[in-house]
Length: 362
Ligand code: G6P
Image (tube, rainbow, N blue to C red; front, side, top):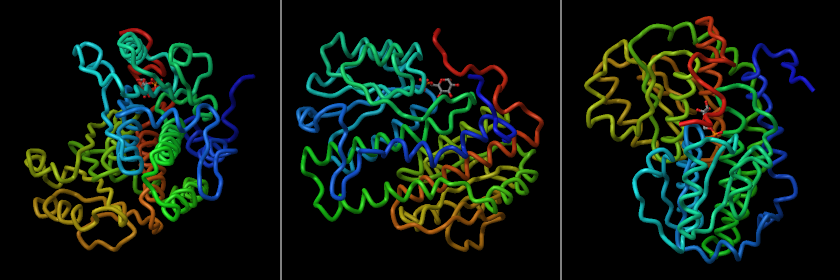
């Protein structure tokens, strides 16, 4: 059956709008009131591992990074993140009692597949998080969690990223149960937040319209810095990657607290700083990081629930207590912002120049 855009301008847009359904599919059959279940393997299996390594490329690497924060915070398991093309040639030292996880939309990315084979050859247990059933990584890994995102056509990954992050969150909670690191009240809170994400990622018309209008202000300039802290750092990386993939503008994601160690030298009015100012997470810290940039004349685009007088543009988001709800709320904003800028520049956002959906060669 030919994939259709169903009234959307691009597959990327359709896929952004599909995210509520994707998250609903991922949660189906997996949530109880006080616990999560993954039928793919028993939670006791996870209790055996002393650490976890998450390995991936591109957008999937950003999901891995977000996953490492969740796994350490919820399950208290030491988590490492690896870029596959670096890992595989480094002669890495692996924890023989660790779990090795690969994350890949396609299940075919050459570097990630080879990294998986390397870990397997060293005797580690392996788990693949893939969107494509029967892909090479699914066949190679000892366990699999399928992402349930449906076919993704846009080269710039959107719904597969949401699916990866949600699946990693489920994994972290499942692992937490096996290690008994969270009390019941906390587990109930996590599960309630998971249920709410379906609404959070539903695109709100006024937000999309505002981003469409705002996008025309950012077609020039000498670069974008997406900055965030904690979980919003991987999100900053992903926001910057989305923008550069389809708009061909220079964008970087950076940990907000690290700007003073170099990048702040670039600050001037032509530097656009997209600040992911999460109310739930280190708000005062990122606020002071942004104040420093503003004092050096950087143009500040704040994504925030709060009024912020130094913002040149404020993209107001809804307030949520749980960091993951703020994460998903901001994710939709950075996806739409990148798309609107790229469309305004006249680019084909589904088929960006020089990029391939799946990189099966080195
Ligand atoms: C390519 C795509 C990216 C993707 C990366 C990893 O570079 O253009 O969107 O994130 O590969 O792909 P994977 O299928 O392993 O997630």
